[in-house]
Image (cartoon, rainbow, N blue to C red; front, side, top):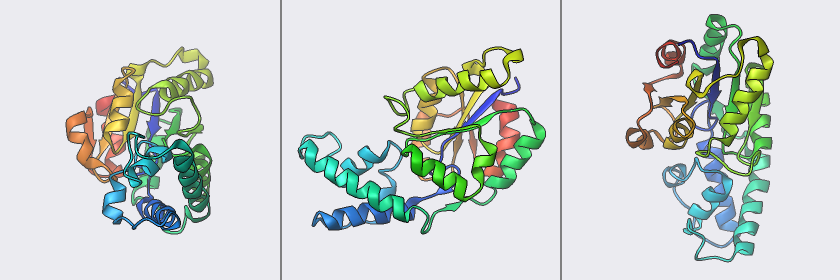
Length: 232
């Protein structure tokens, strides 16, 4: 089946943002008088949105060690710092632009979008900075809806919006949709609504893909065009 919609995660899939995220987390920890964490540890906390990243860095993922005002202040400091420093070291993975160009050449009418748990404003700013926004009809973040991935609300919304772009083909179905991402969160997002998934082994959380069992695995972005024909 030829895919009718492809949706990409951002961090760990299109871009490597681990250094800027780690620096922002450590700036927050220093501000709070807490010891900094190694980048390798912080990178394992990425994927479930800014709030959970901050909670994990504080050692309080369940929210039972700190009051909500403390966590909210920590989150605000992190976000303010990250907004300024989000492009210090972040870069687009090698082969991403070429892969997106190839997908567009093979499937010239195939809509593509971004669905990330990163807040939507920095997500859109980063994509615009690198010229990635020209490939995507939409870019939704972790604060675009009342829930985040792996809840499929954002993915289902993108199916509806992409269907409106090509009304002659009718409603795009989950089985005609492919989610591309580097973590179990992306795989589960697809599975939770019946969509297909491509797991990226080069990203920030490839260790989480084994248990999630994506439909296919990509060792590099160069494999995306070929895999779309297999998984769609």
